[in-house]
Image 1 (tube, rainbow, N blue to C red):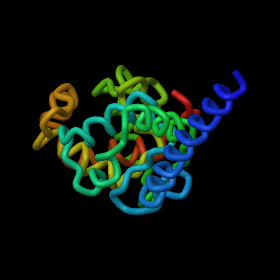
Image 2 (cartoon, rainbow, N blue to C red):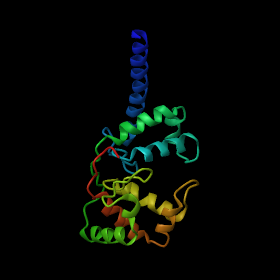
Image 3 (cartoon, rainbow, N blue to C red):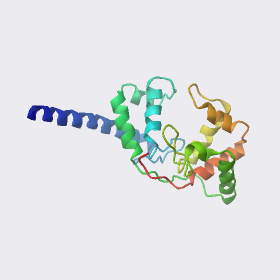
Image 4 (cartoon, rainbow, N blue to C red):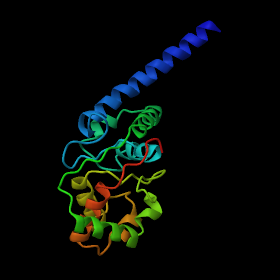
Length: 191
């Protein structure tokens, strides 16, 4: 019995050590605490666990092209992905603003958030849920081009609902929405 416990402790420590090492690799690009300091690199702190798991699996399996991420996830096991997503989702999100606050853009972005019903899927605090990402306190310079990509050239395996919601939304309105979302209060971690 004692030997079994030692093996269980050893395997658990090894498993979480591997996941922790991968966690550190993530933070090298996505910010020291999961809140990106680099333009066009998303913050990953407080992203819903299931969203993170799905994205990592999609990238690992080549279903979501990401040449920058693929080398880091290609050899991850499902168990490592689950542990990694759990660690990342527990990190607190912090706003990372990449431009000065513009009251007119904030107002227009809030109006668009209501009109486009973003809160229906991303929740009223824009914190995301399950496989739906957190938008609140996300980098503005990442949100804007990603929303334009959803509108203009949805990626294979991407969310077709997002392409439909953003269809016909102008670049100026996407800019306002990104400005507003980047300044929305960060939700609590651990979803």
